[in-house]
Length: 427
Image 1 (tube, helix red, strand yellow):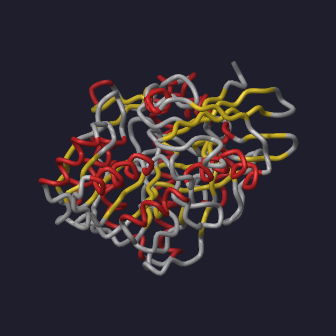
Image 2 (cartoon, rainbow, N blue to C red; image 1 turned 180 degrees about the horizontal axis):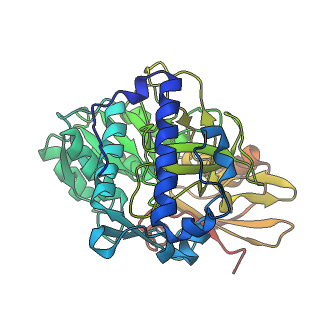
């Protein structure tokens, strides 16, 4: 059983100390994979059994989501009696996939999120309202709940409930933190304000699933809206079901810090080559201290960049920038590469828009983009939606008006996360 001491000071140690500990844990994890994981026993068979340095990590093979889907049982490294929890990936890029955790892995998850929450300034005095689901075989709600409890705080597990239900809890309980998807939290803030419910006690908004920063680390329109309600209280956190290693912003709010003893971060290009800090590429994580389904160099499919400049919080870990898009969601329109966020950021700034989603079709030469938009008031013409999109993206897209109910069903109806991007290119 691994040790997960919340009072560790490793993140504040000199970079070389962190590096040495990560290398020790990396080699321990490789040995564990060779011994217990059928998949890695075969995948690593042609490599010499020797200690490696972090810069030699690229000598190990990359692991893809497809690998985990197609060889799922071969990744399980423990006996059935050691499995404590089974979850499934959300399936946003394919069919759901089973992920298993041991008791140690669950303790690791609690430690990871408690470490992240502590970096935002949360303490044992906080009460967190969890607005993401704890059911439907999803890990996020459970992870954030366990993290808050390990920190010593209290949780209110209201999950994917109504605005009225959340408002009643906030009004009648000492809620000081909210964990949820930022677009939902923004709607909740509007609702609370309209109901004249005091929100000033809430000092921590932990945002999941949607980025708060642009490529240049400026705030997205959605983040700016949240800042208007809770100045200085908005934090981003990132993880995945497979690696369960959280990257949460500290009080400086400039990229997500990990617990350095839980994972090693890489950014790679389209050919699998490591990229230097600041360069945009695919996020690759090698989780450490993972027992049930250990992974080496796992390709998350998310696009971001690494930040290695010193952070004034005193932590000496590298940080993860915002998730700019998923690799599968990159758009190519008449030779121009774009991301869904290029369009979503524009829509987030237009008052009157209630909800929206994107469908992408077309062939290998150029994508065809259809945007479906619902309105609280106004319409496409009066709110100048087409003109604003064209000004900011220089691309003409097909615009469609849908009802608020239809948009909500589309965005929230098929997955446990809000889904605004629908890829029809491979259908």
